[in-house]
Image (cartoon, rainbow over all chains, first blue to last red; front, top):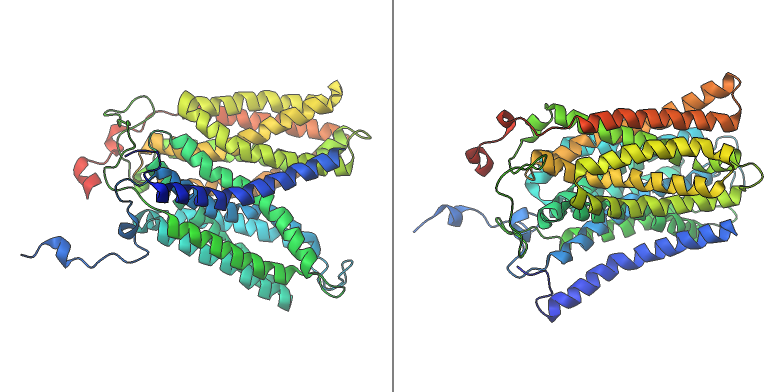
Length: 41
Length: 461
């Protein structure tokens, strides 16, 4: 069984699933970094 | 002609058999399902953002008579962590049997429901309801939601189990980074001159967390029996600490290896909590006039980044250098860094202090993320979820006794005339001592004796 996307449907689902968790996570990380930089200034 | 399979009822929507991946399924679709759950339950680390507003539910701008005290509210988090460990320990076997979809949805119902019950508790100003809601119900959601995705990812990534568990448990570390600003924004949006907005925030978070975790439960899949990733050849014989055998959860519980790992986790967590709980005050008191309260708060935010990153990085590294060696690094490097932290005020270097504490926090997170893969190496993959569940009682124990121990040591020293800044140094040296005990436990790890292994017939049954 391959790790690579098997078809367009799988590829689209991969992108959608990872965006679903990636966007909130990156938002949280960005907020944390922004607060940390603000406070260290 | 009748056969046994035709007599069996079709699997239900929530059953494990219903979510077995078909041929061609891409395993990289599964980590987001695990992250959906861990990003939500990881918000437990950010629960303290509700503490101050909950001390002003009556007084609104400041605490009034009848308002709850911080000490009373502190028990909500402790109760949640205790219930995490206990529910993981008691439901681990059930979770292994029913599969991840049912487990994740049960976790979503408990965790989301816990917020809703707590919202009622805030509305009625009944602290007992919050203990019951977030503490007990939410805590059970934490425990159930923690182990099931981890076990699922281990089965999907037999070639990189450390990286797989690191991905899920990194989400637990990252959850607080989302929950903290999100909760503050929601409370701000719902607050009025006569209302602090905590109850409404709990309702929104409860619904959001339930939906997000439920999505995880819906998209999760388990591999078909005998599945292996392309190009992966499972080892035929045990090698070093990595076994190809299976140890039953009830047997594992009685082996010295389980208890050695219990202490490894407990001591690593206790030492980490010793730093996390005091990081802000420690930075200000060890470098008076140099580190302000605001800068110290930013420093704490930085620590959460290292806590999260360490979970993925260290667990992935363990796939290359081995679990035992990874923990040797945690304990040896940890001891050196704890001693260094204690000495940085005499050296006068805040940069060195920040660097040392950040690395310590990365190893604190790494300890959580590497332990499931360590269990899988020692006891086999079959019962790793249930065994992991029982091992998490070490986290509960450290979560309760760690801060008590650290605070007690510090108070004792200050009462006996030790200067506040010096008291931190002594506490750090004691933490280094705890890591030495952890190192001894880790070095004592040996493969499980053969007579504990299940026979092939028992494994198939």
